Length: 443
Image (cartoon, rainbow, N blue to C red; front, side, top):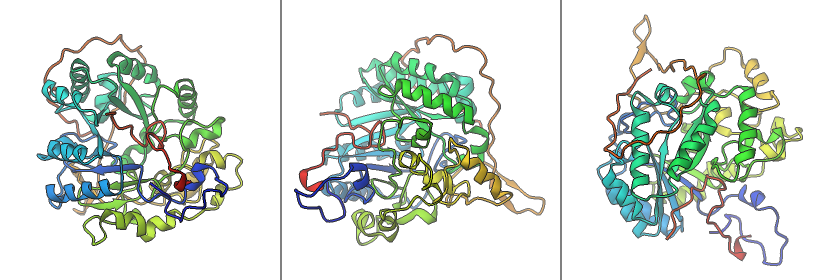
């Protein structure tokens, strides 16, 4: 894998790798592929507004053609999500095809189809990793966001994986103001199963745009989160999600860089390629894998990606002494809250984002381009269909978390949705450079 720009002579001075990454690579090292929008849950913060399958999904043969292309590009693994990817009838066929073609797989799941038999199959593979989503260390907190019964389903899946001897699977937590107080409890759950905890940031993407103001951590909680991550940084994965917190002091582990279109991108179920999994909007759509140039053509030649790889000045943040650490924060978080892309992150720890949001007044921020939700839409008095309604039941978390009790291995619990030779390291985990060793010609 080499830089998109012509590689300099071997004797040329080599700058910081993060600076070179801003110019882009000839293949992504953090490729997310959402195989389907179909999902048996309706999480209120779903970044892709999943629920209903898109009838124009890539076919099995088209998916295999993409995998062939990833192999030629030497993409060493892909992060598969959705929706709930395991509901695709060809899911396991595609996983087997990918690993047979030297593309490792990590897939994210709500756990509803991780039966004891499936867990044993996964434990026998060296090139497949699993990430179970859990957004509360208790059923009360988790189910308010992910749906009634989803906590029990996730815990049963974890028990099945542990019982099958699958060590080191991931437990993925979207940090919200309702679960910040449970960070220690999440870590305890992960340790109990021999799993690894992964924390990620809540973005105002997809249905998350409807609940971001209600669920994103407060300023005080951001400091609590930063201190906790600094104390547990070597044990907890973050997906490089929290580089906007670097202004508190020392930078967190990772590139501390928005990799959108540089080292990161998303392929959605119909083959559209976006700069970032959290930026599903026409503004950030670079092309489609069904085009004549395929995925490689989009990645290497799209006007959007080439523009994102050009050096930037930092805009309104360039005069800030912390810019080299936080790089102005998350592109998607700014866009979907209506802030300019060269301005501060809405959760800027210096308060500049809050000031900018206040200046927007009643301005309506952009909405995600796609919505596959199964949530009932509200209708105005005039009969016009308005935005989908998503709400989160208030959660009180005053009582201490009870000790972890073993959950008997079993088939996953049915979920009732409340509408209110190494496993691949996720490139967006602790460090987007995981398992990446640049050759001399790439520096």
